[in-house]
Length: 132
Image (cartoon, rainbow, N blue to C red; front, top):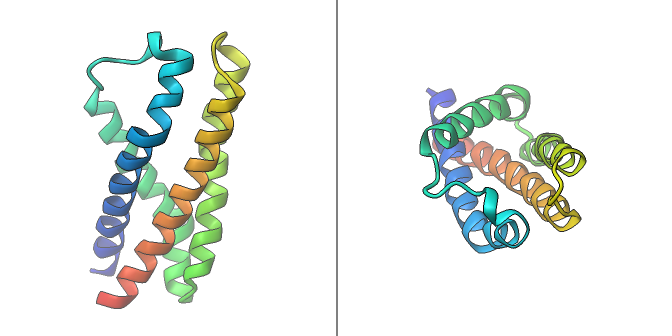
């Protein structure tokens, strides 16, 4: 039961925070640099698949071990590292291969991904500890 609570709470935190981050911070930067590449409308299927799989991976590598050890800060730090790796891989690959990609996108999105992932793991562990 705690695994279901952990997954659903983490997914909720990730979705809510990322929707705020995308609309308020990420999309404006991407529109400025690569607006001509953005899908309109957003393709929800691939986005939903990413969110579901990313949070599952976050639980496997970070949140479940931190929950089992009763160490929410371990979840925060592990989440930050996973976020840096995942978002950094995307951003630095695009910077290396796409003509219009910018350092601004790389820095903002990589730091956003690290923060988002760390806070998601931490909040999921705290919530799960509180309700199970």
